[in-house]
Length: 326
Image 1 (cartoon, rainbow, N blue to C red):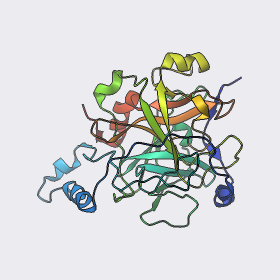
Image 2 (image 1 turned 135 degrees about the horizontal axis):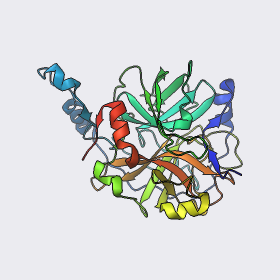
Image 3 (image 1 turned 30 degrees about the vertical axis):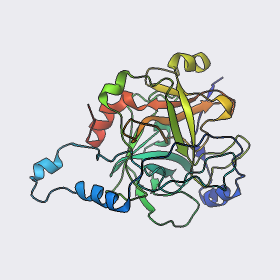
Image 4 (image 1 turned 60 degrees about the vertical axis):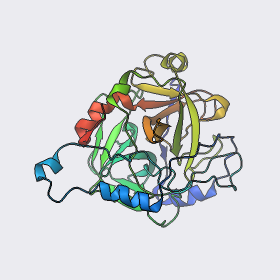
């Protein structure tokens, strides 16, 4: 019997907005995040001005592979906890400006992360590809059931690239890239998440506290996804500890796992979303792409599984043109 559950949730196309309004409040205790990096309005405007290409730059230079912007992974709004939330963590607008919502063929829901102005990182099982596969990508959202939100944008794309070694039986190499039809304009609510350094490839990050965000089901007893973006902080565990639960054919070197202690975990609908940690300079860096949970339940206490981003940096760079930090 398979012990894994892909955590993309399939929804009837016409029922998405209805279902997510019928959720019950989150009932699990979630440790809130530390205060995130902040920018004033004038500082943010200066950051945006600094990233504009020089008009006198040779066109060949502007076409060369470019690194992510130096503010990648930063949060540009003043984030405060919402006092209405009891025993849970509700994200405020702009707290995870790289978070993407992805609706596949109007029926299935996944998460993703903005890694450049034209590329979304997500799970391979969220990107089936094939003729006619359509991805509706929503950026800058906090409530996916809202008809509109200030600063929110939407794109539709059919361009997806799955990792060539993706194995849908054991969910190895569960990572994919979507390409937007045009560049998104960055703002206080939309920004790119930082990718790890090449030198991080040998770092297991075991024991590191990381944060995962998404609109997935808030409990095992809820049948539909959350309408509002939520997050939870989880400790990364060793691959050997994770393999003791799922086996070495599932947990390979390019897999990362987080503890599910206390029933805290990802769930259906969170697939493809970002797992990030805070670097010394305060920026959030993506370490994982949400992949699987135990088939015994999201709150079973078993680990959640992710594609380990440090294992795919060269592949990401080749397929996006992003220059990875050394």
